[in-house]
Image (tube, each protein chain N blue to C red):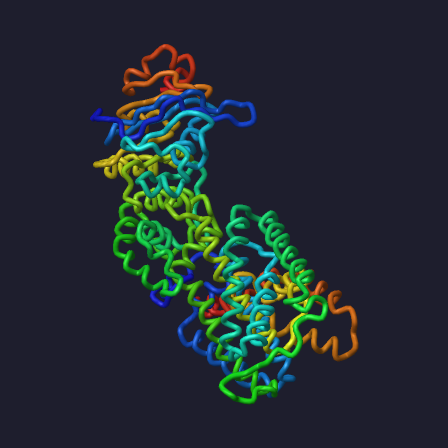
Length: 338
Length: 253
């Protein structure tokens, strides 16, 4: 939660703070080196992986970061984020088919639709906390799932939306390799937006609300309204991911709205590290790659593996990959400083 | 000292599942006075605090702040109207530094907290004032330390700093010296004496010497009702109070 202004040595007194804080407090050259490394990996990705998998990683990175914005930075565990991912996927697909919009505009429309439905859902959900919040979000996601299932004339029902066009100014984007590079700027913008939100005055208030909502209210902050705003912003980012997902596959089915999709997003965040933001990106990369590898090897019970990974992450390294790495780095630099 | 009432309650009542924690309390806190609430454990002091700050809605009764009905307003609205409180059990943001706490409190009345598209560095505009407040409560050296790493007395001091950062008309302090050593108690009394100028202070306090040094008016609560109210000297000489509560404390002097 800190800024460069605060990152003098004195800032490291006391116990280690959460992963993001640890990185934010790292020297500027460490932060730029990490950023540069991330961009290099992002630019290289479809050369090292099957490009369709690389596109999926981008989508899931956005989705994970959107979930972490709530889970890690607002203290709200949404178990219904498939509602926003899936709604955006359907809306983006429909406007691409019906209106022939260029794909970035279709994705944006989908994300805005996700943000719009997040307003009433969030309004009701943020009045609850903990498991009750999770249950309310799950209930709404299930409602949307059933509506999409019954409303077959629009959503294609069990067949899903087929042959979603992928168009941008007459460019040929049928090759997944090129589509990846068209999708990358949208992803980077979405991730930058998440970073900006977390490192804004608003983000500072969210952390306060996460850590002590009663104290935040006593300071005059309307906690429900802040949580609702965070919820809508998170839904928008999840919608960016879902919109890119339908463009990547040129197809969307009810799976996108299924509760297991919400669950997988939470698994990705836990694996990467709650409250670390970039951990979700790393988690998305690993889990999407692993699932692809498993299904390519003909392994059927992918859920079993992701479930086992979730349990291992919770039991063995609760800070996730990013959080654990940041803790090790912080200890190393503290040891060196003495 | 006794001016018009800035904060007043009429018939304030709060039930918890059949148990009446606060029962028909009338309270008038004079502007720019220090008003102490005392009474044995379970007398309803903290519940009364939670009612006055909007953290609990009353079962019955009304609360007025400067002539305005504030009954049933949520805590953030009450805070915005100029009522700041501290908590009996230290209530901070464990991961934020002392300075970040005060900056967050200073930012609250502005709209800056909504700017999710701006950099948190903008909060640096509060830094100077934050450091002044930290200096005032003796935390200047510890501005960068996360709250969870502060010693108990320091945490209480930080509570006071963030309440003051709101520049409140009414300052409600729930046991500001609880669990403090003598030295910290003296420092806190001195600090409250300094900051009370131009403000109205309501405090729950068990330490009678602190009450004696600070309070203009003392309200003694027992079993959720007002037992006695008046200046400290008068209250402490009151037979009912001696029987109910003060007797044991005075005998110890």
